[in-house]
Image (cartoon, rainbow, N blue to C red; front, side, top):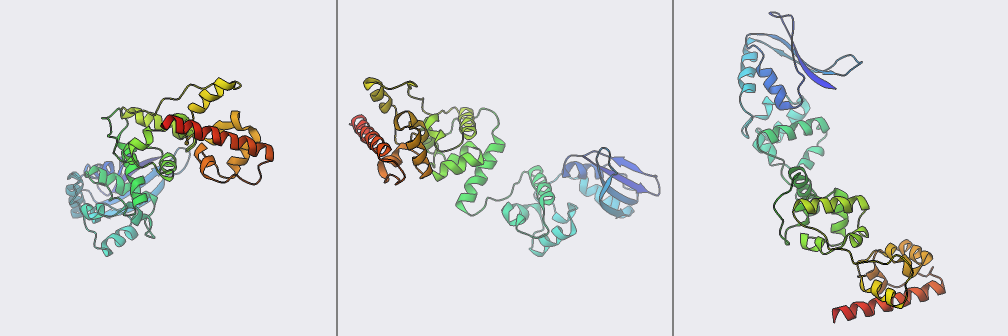
Length: 316
């Protein structure tokens, strides 16, 4: 779908301008209209195979055209008045009733406050976001800490698309611009800084978030010159005495329960995951679920003892 401007005037039968992709392009298109013309300015949505849909009609006299030409040809700035942006009357009334007169006033609001207003929809918010960006502004961050973290993460993800300077260890995790699902899973796990995140291996991180989120997190870390911890060598086959000890030494309290299936068995692993056990550390700190059979309970108790011994040995 494309959007065009059609001027129907007495001096000229019609004049067509378009298509345009943003509100700033529309203002510039209006600025190219002859200031001596009067008539109706129509904004049309043109889609292949359908009749054009009229979005709005503005009647303009000679003086009005001249004023519009002067305003639209001027650069968008933080002091541009909101009533010059050709917004919908209901949205414009809401802004003026709340004392918002310029783009600078509008940029002081969080975007969530606009969504909460009845009469301001997706099209208006997208248009205002584009105009603020043209003026070098953006909406204020939300006051809620969790919402602010996600807001900063979205801004960062939109800004950094190429390799950038490395981020310090104490930087907030939102400085990486992760996927929203990855950020939610990481903060739920208690990861607040980049240092907390890079202390995980990809396998351990897979127990916290989806595989797609893990792949995206690795890519985002690579943009900032960082990486996760390398994986320990694994032995996919059966475990002898030495092999089992080596495998236990490669585990940590953050190893996902689903990766312990070679040691615990399919039934025990499924029962633990159904009871909300996510990592090996949960087995050490929580009571085992009652649905475990006696045989599986013995196997899990043995694993817990071996893992606790391995961790204490490595810590010493």
